[in-house]
Image (cartoon, rainbow, N blue to C red):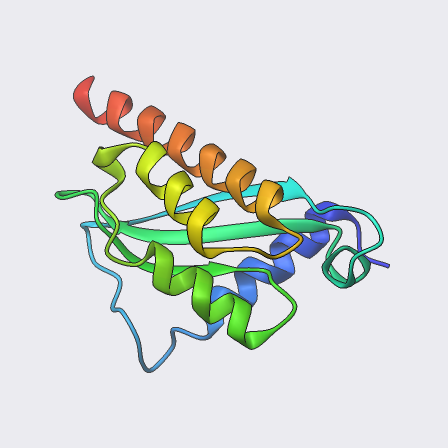
Length: 134
């Protein structure tokens, strides 16, 4: 079984590998942020991943999420989460997005999903604060 760090590395390696030859092209204005949270025990997702990882690419000029991926077990769940995230403006803060999760996502990983996204928002705030200091 892979350790958490190894699983996270494998997830992000797979995420970046999918981008070769297609998808969003990396440029100076695209930044990757990630967050993770422990999945609930005795669920399929927990038996596969142990942790939910979310990775987003956002435009640093606007704060808009361009691409997103979550380590969900089923393709439909990964696709659904990505659809909820893509186009969201990180400058709007987490509350509206958490309300969207509350209304539309009713899977076992809801709390982990919210926790991972709050981590992404915290990293975004750190990123923005660091840019202002430059």
